[in-house]
Length: 493
Image 1 (cartoon, rainbow, N blue to C red):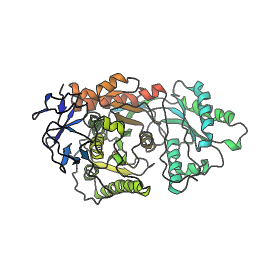
Image 2 (cartoon, rainbow, N blue to C red):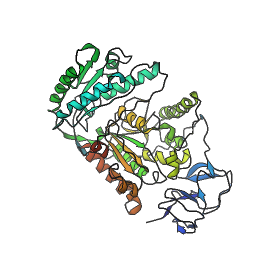
Image 3 (tube, helix red, strand yellow):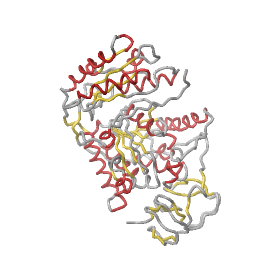
Image 4 (cartoon, rainbow, N blue to C red):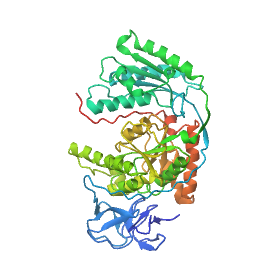
């Protein structure tokens, strides 16, 4: 196993693939370097002398500027490098027009829907319209567990604190989120549970749902019935009875929408897990399927790579707004745009936001950008899509599900147990994490460092996703972890 990797020949630094000790002389392919300090796994070492004020190159791009002279063999990290990023920018379109081969879609056993894409699960979802009925929804879900079995693959409540005391676009976003979940293909049945006096009640949410299969959705306003638990259970039993008729049939992979997300990243995420997801994205989109890349604040510093891959100038302009609008969102609250990476990221070897972003965007693969989505907007175009949402793990993963993802791929170098409303595949950047947290991790991308090629690993991930689409449970599902987190963007009344 190699001990260091220089990602591109332009790079001034190499990344440790295992913990290394001061005084070791280590080969990195194009040469060798003697370490001046201990180097934790995922951290960077200087391959040549770097002068104060000089841009530091990794992934072939600047990841920041040296704040002190760094000798060859020195540890390159927060003590001697800082970000070069600033506020909103003007951008120029330099299209690369990446070519993408076409592949015949493979199939997976899914649940066909009368309207829209097939579901990869046939679950019964209880969705509160407002936080005031969260406990009612949870009580109904608990009582309805007796209905699980056969084609009823689960009964879940999705509590949240919103639906009232919101204004303007913030309230509209909540309505659209709940409407999109009520029509999600993974839900074979939905009970939309309202209180009756909230701003975003059932009457306000239904118009956001568009055309929907009325046999699969029921509505209940708690203030209008004597016993909402009794009434709710009766409606849930109706839905479950209807769902028992559903069967899995072969569905083409061009009907899959897969969300791409990372969290708790380390210095290996951009070398192993994220490039593996990128290969997967290229495979799926070449079959006519769709992928969605989000967490816009973690694109800062690598956004021009995505902009130049936009299929046309109109998409380029949308991507410019995607980036600059998010910067303005931070500035409107008088917050620093670049308060990133997190303490865990830094401990894992990520130094600046550029460093993090260049690793993050590896998940997008090499295909063209085909769509740019507002928050809570559904995917309309096959191929790679960019989605406006923050970096927060639960909020961004929920946003991917809301935009139509039947599965979310979540790479991590530090580990995390959560699940969003859809199966959330945890992909470890390193094998020690995969071995230590088998109860969290679904897929070990650290195998790239022990003999597998990137193409082999990407195909292996494609096979795994097809298995999940066909019913294989992810760790978050086995653990019973399903969370909903809505992106709040306004005042609370």
